[in-house]
Image (cartoon, rainbow, N blue to C red; front, side):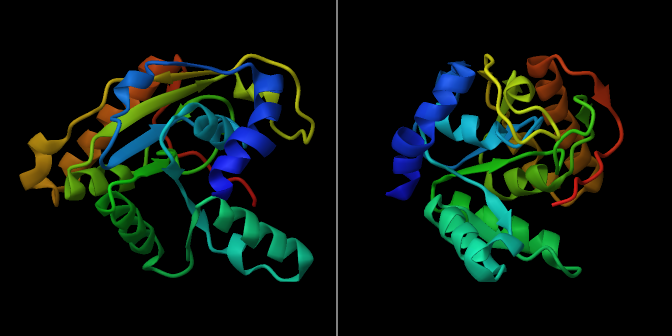
Length: 222
């Protein structure tokens, strides 16, 4: 319930005032069934605008620290992320990545929409960086289509390093779903997984118009 209240009542109207968002290609997102939505990642508000403009409910996986912090601030964070339908993952230890992927598989097995940023973190320089292979691994294991989405204009609304929002124009561009089922029998082949990931990043580069960098983006401090 809170997800929809945030979207339509508490946060959505503010986003519409600042970003005047529009969406192109929304018909590319299947109306039902498991779907992976994969977006470029420019700034913090990407997730807010993505949730606002996509009709179906999106579930992201969020780091476990958001759910375990103590004090009043920690309780507020825990309530917000839980109410918004986000799923905690433990990123510590060697099994952290596999835990995150297992959680994603469960979301898709339930016929839901899993939201993910293939770069793994926000772009440090506005360019599109090399994608991590987790998305392809999950897509090959579940058969879920991958829908590439490009965010435009969010950096103007929420400049990197600034806590103040500015007025701008946000556009969400949705590309045609990518079907990796032709690779299903080779899903354990790391070269195939890398090729599927690169196909996704090429689609994001085409949609976003960003310069592509064949290096992983550095993780920003929490």
